[in-house]
Length: 349
Ligand SMILES: O=C(O)CCC(=O)C(=O)O
Ligand SMILES: [Fe+2]
Image 1 (cartoon, helix red, strand yellow):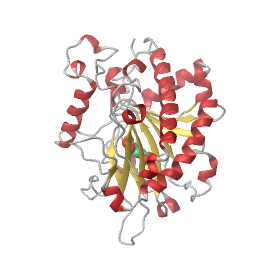
Image 2 (cartoon, helix red, strand yellow):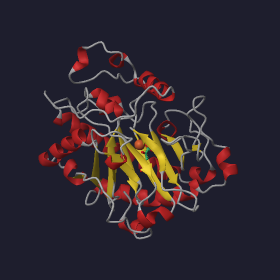
Image 3 (cartoon, helix red, strand yellow):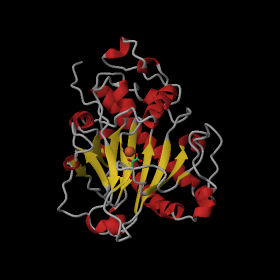
Image 4 (tube, protein in one colour):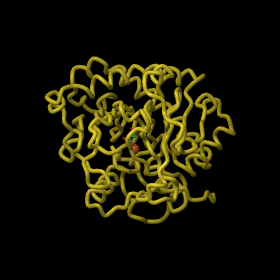
């Protein structure tokens, strides 16, 4: 996450809203192979599917924090480009995943009202040279090495988390890392999100990005302004009393697991439902920027579970990551999939 400096530039996160308690995992301790930290990591990934990763006092972590601070500045510039420029780089799903911008209001929130955010996605494949670089606005081209550094450092951290989890689950340490190498084509993206400040008196505090689980393996998220909410495990998304705020912490990334980790672990690891709400308290009056690395399996990775039902011939067990993602996206667009948290089943191996 961003350093303390960027937190001092925005209104403080209020103390009178219900927040979710989250484990803080030290990256330095993970790098040292500390047993207690590794066990706490597994517990957090089973129980909530979210944790804070403390980057401080770790060489890689400190470098990443520096890059994130710089990317927040670039991110503001990118998200405040004129609509005329953004129109030239619109994402064009399903015809192509190569575009960059999603305009405000294109998706809906739970009430059917338009969303309140824009995003900009830049694919790992172009940055790593797996495919040609997607068309990008000049301000992004001039900072391409910063995006690539964020990607590479972020992927190193994802590899550390993945191998620690595999070892804790008594699997070979490379079980998950071998299925998501950055050098192979995948849907992995860096994402900048702008959720708009509350401006119109007629507007009401509401959802900016609808509740969802992430498709992929692991998401690294840098937040400064609040607004991210997590559904209490086991709860129903329509029960407003069960939503808890995440309090962003200087020096810490918010990390969450996606559905692919649930599938590979036969439901032991958890991917939890989350959403972006208006930022709480005085924070609602500022535009909220966030930065994420959303890691997906390589396109051809097998989605066969590594634990439990690996021998079963279930449909998902026989799919490649690409086929599995298309199936999920189609079921979401048909609205026959209920958006719910997955995983968190007891470990019996
Ligand atoms: O910006 C955030 O805090 C969350 C974004 C998110 O959940 C996503 O892009 O999947
Ligand atoms: Fe998400």
